[in-house]
Image 1 (spheres, rainbow, N blue to C red):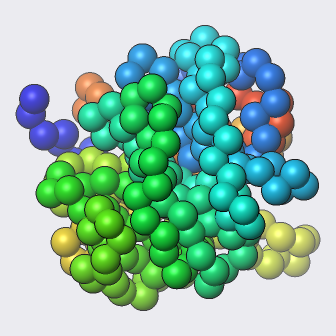
Image 2: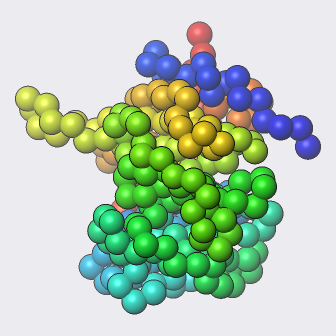
Image 3: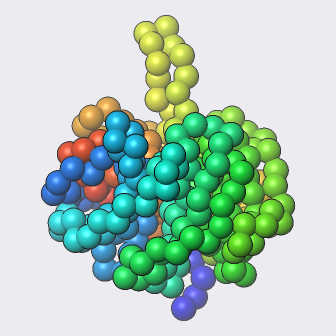
Length: 259
């Protein structure tokens, strides 16, 4: 299989507009979604239920039916974060619901059977696998970028040099490229304003090489990169699949509009 063409990512800018291509209602309560990734013919969703102190993984089919659930709570660690699948498996960070805390990083196989990969002394908000067997991870809000071994040894780390948006979810594009999606909340004269955006991250350098705002919102008012988001580059177009609303939610697909 040929590597994805990243040209489409690098043309995204402030002028990019997005069109809603599809929307599927998810049956049942999805909690507060955090991560979304392709899972074979289905979706894998990470979600948290703060009032219950519980984190979950959901398998959701392309018609919106919830096929399976897995409780991933580990004591005071229940914030299941951003995810990206790999070869029928997935790494899942489950952290305390506060910054600068601790995380249990699980690995689930294709049958959603979990094993503890390692424990980490920071809040990891999202984790994704890289082609060489290492992991790229980001801390709470994406303030620190980490390169980790599969057993949690820090191979490299760097403070995020940008404060454009806080990274919430990750998509692996190729062996050296990861896209982080997220949100910033800024104060305006009429109150708080949501700023959606994405960052193209050089996984070798642990550095964003390009950032672009994302100007598209769900009917709830949440920007489409608010929480769970998964990118694909099929047919040379950038698509953002998102699951951002709480409890009663929609998995929506937005495609870039080119002149």
